[in-house]
Length: 270
Image 1 (cartoon, rainbow, N blue to C red):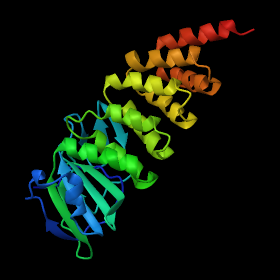
Image 2 (image 1 turned 60 degrees about the vertical axis):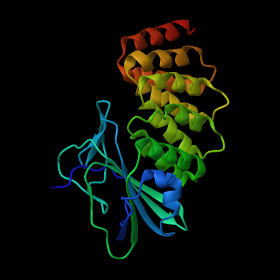
Image 3 (image 1 turned 90 degrees about the horizontal axis):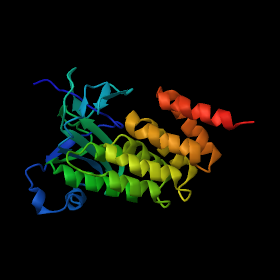
Image 4 (image 1 turned 45 degrees about the vertical axis):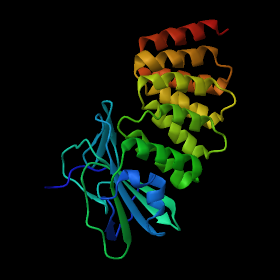
């Protein structure tokens, strides 16, 4: 069977392999199984992806969106031209038992590890456990690799993580890079995330960078959700810079309601 798809967040290779996939997930938490791996090396695991996610080796698709990624090769996974819907394949690079890098893929099959390193394969783990673990990494680790843990968490099947992403975005103790990643992927989540984005954008207690990212994320929502929130920000927010951002994205939306907003604002000017 030829390899399928991949989604890469980085890329250094693996090595000799310990097959731990036969271990029961009930034998311990995901953290404890990772802690039992070698202090230095890679830990591999797989988990079920959301059914709307697929990857063909060069681009990632979800909710009908299509994003081109620059990487088209990987030392971890093999793939072909077809877009495969799972599983998510995650690689953690450990140094003294602490994750220092993450790589994530969708579909495909693992490459044989190289001989100059160490790989522990945990096999398939519950998607909800993987998502919860990744969100904890995002909260606990420095910006690198903490910010890289956000995206693969969003790929986990049947894991409702958008409330946690909103909490991450509001937490001033978390690195800004991780918080902006949380806002961005919150914006790609299901429609019920729109209210959280609107709230983030209008909360003066939240950093300006994070608020601006929330405005951008609203611009990526379906028009019947995001445009209304952008209009409210453009017309009523007390931050002039945020109003400008909202007006800019309204101008890019192509929504006829944006013209009404522009006309109303211009009419009020002397």
